[in-house]
Length: 285
Image (cartoon, rainbow, N blue to C red; front, side):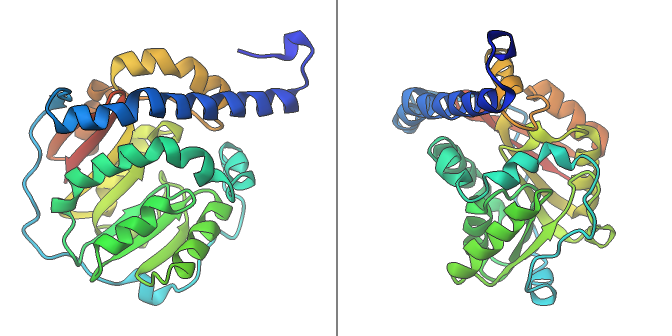
């Protein structure tokens, strides 16, 4: 979909596309997501599941490491390849959560309800696409004896998350500008859990990203991915995302996620719908 044929300049088209995307997210949240919460609680809406949830962790967690060594954001020295995919996120970093949180809040609430038994107090977690830091800072409060590494390819997002955490008095966090497909070498085996919130559809190389999630986890660690995914939602929404969502690549169905997870070497795969159209993947190394 493009408006250039109507004589509308590209800059105005981007503004129109962004407004339509935000309006669609807010409408879907109001019309579908929030009404589904009490229905789910009452058992009148029963989300689909694929596979069994993996067993809970047997060890306490890896504890604090990066937040002690890196009190300030660690940024890349040079502009990395593919950075044009996140340029627009840098431009809207200050307002990003205002646009997204009305849609994301109920989804993340449901995801964390499932994830909490897997997050021990001393767990070390990496958020591979932290955005403006809403979920990263929340996760840090759930692992008081552990830590959260907030990572994102967009440098301004990393800096925004840093300021958000420090203004909230959160100290058990570190901040890295990093490409999820090429995370720092010394991250190998260093995390109890990885977390990706509503961002996997932006990854240009999903197999490489999934292999990196596997590489940086300790044995029996968990990868959590929250994203759109059922086939009906992918069919309904991909046209809008392709036009209006900067850096969008593709949504993935449960079958496509399972292929990615299995081929990356994970031992267990679970997928469950959290609310209509949005799902949580849990993979265990």
